[in-house]
Amino acid sequence: MNETDKPVRDIVVHRANILKDVIEEFKDPTILETTQTYNVVIIDDHGRVEAGRGTGVTREVVSLFWNQFYPSLSTGANRKIPSIRHDYQKPDWEAIARFLVFGYLNTHYFPITLSPVFVADCLFGEKAISKDFMLNSFYEFVSNDEAETLKKASSSDFDLNDDELLDVLSSYKCHNLPTKDNISLIISQLAHQELVQKPRFISNSMAPILNQLKDSSQFSSIANLTSFYESKRPTPKKVVKLFVGTASNDAQRQTFDHLKRFVKSLSDETLRLFLQFSTGSDLLVVECITINFTTINGAARRPVAHTCGPVLEMPSTYQSFNELVEEFSSILSNKESWSFDIV
Image 1 (cartoon, one colour):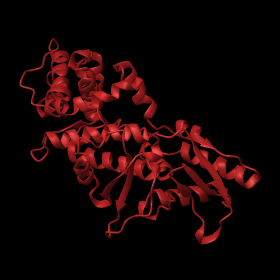
Image 2: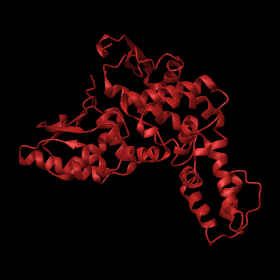
Image 3: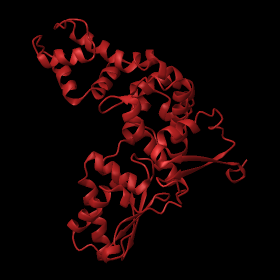
Image 4: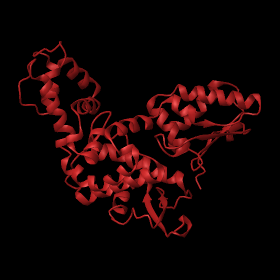
């Protein structure tokens, strides 16, 4: 059956309630069947159907879902672990697993903020997780200050009277008195407690559905999973390499240079905003971003994103790098002002 012959299934979500709407939609165990295609529809904050359709909208909904998921349904600092809530039962976690698979298969999006240990446990089981992999993931799960304290304690700088160490251990319900001989074991046990034991009900619920990801080479081993995580992590250098465009005059060449310089200056958080503005996704999920140039000037001048392409239209009328920085930074800091063409 050709894609055009498949029935189309609408996935309708409200922009103000994407997390819960997606979970309700994906409680249907047939939703991932390959006999259908999908049309993601967003209802805006005023109850109106948004005009956008296509891959850009799907990428946007997938990104928004996970950005709402992390503060509501997970714990952790740089890497997150799904956390138990009384109002989320097995059907909810199965729905989340289906949406994770849906997002990867349809947009190449994978929520790399999820701890790789949690994903590895779902895919390969606890026995496949090495001590070093567990420990490194734990240091990303705890805060930067906590990680520094624990690393210091496990080195030759161990100090039983270090209040910061005792506070950290206490916060993770450690009941053993640490010594130089047992501190490494304690840290390993806490890592296992937080990354494997606590989310066990969730991983058991999600694992049978996530297992189908193993058909992709990226999920065939822990080594491949680790490489995949790194490949999805946005950096200014990676984003600039996505730019494809032909500058035909000095003004366009100057704008292209200014755009690259601007992206290289962005913090991690702002870089994700730039990606979301340009592609609909806050991670690396596209092979290129086409840069087209316009001659718009005055009050109407602004970058415009066509996220299905994705294509970024850049005015070539900036008189200086600072002009571009000021205008683009203002746009990124105010999502409501974003101008898209995602039909």
